[in-house]
Length: 234
Image (tube, rainbow, N blue to C red; front, side):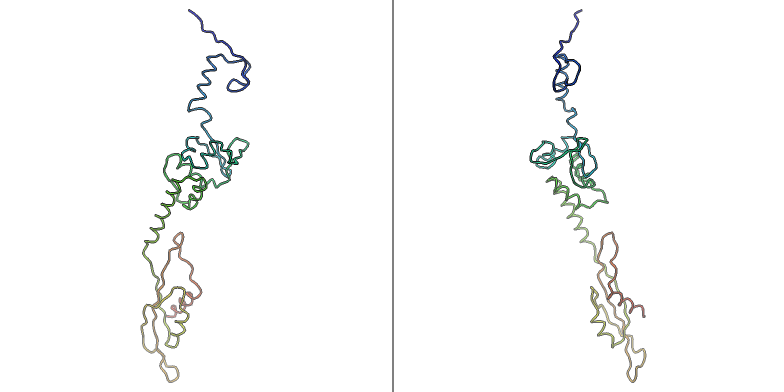
């Protein structure tokens, strides 16, 4: 039976055979060249250092949007001043917290934002990386969120204040901060002052209770506190 012999090539100065003690045979050299051209080669992976946090992904993922900053980064665009750290990762001075949703969108095409992240933060990153389809999705999500908030029925808080007839004018002049009269009810005379009867009234006032972040109501203003103190006299 004939034996197969490898015909050695001279030692390679560069490429896959560089640095080896002897040259590679023609068959082995051709095999390694074919391996380097396969989709699973090492050059397929890209390492990013975003604000001190490392992300590992593929060139295919980063090249989803040909107009994006990340696509130009993978193409080694000479117009981009992209430095690398000591590990070879591309340095990007952005918030890594909001880069996660951006990278995941490029991976699977879906917008997923954790409840503790603000949509506006993701929008800022999408605009920085110039990912047009993601920008549209985030803006639609923000509009949807805001429309739900505006459809919440307006709530009112009511106060019942007791005052005398001579205090009505003063109460009207101090009424502000959104408070308005709803009803004025006379409860008759409570006592005599000199030769005149002093009439007593119940004033019903109301104010819209606006929603604030995290569902907490705003603190009452000083004038609102005065109204509350007068109401406690009942």
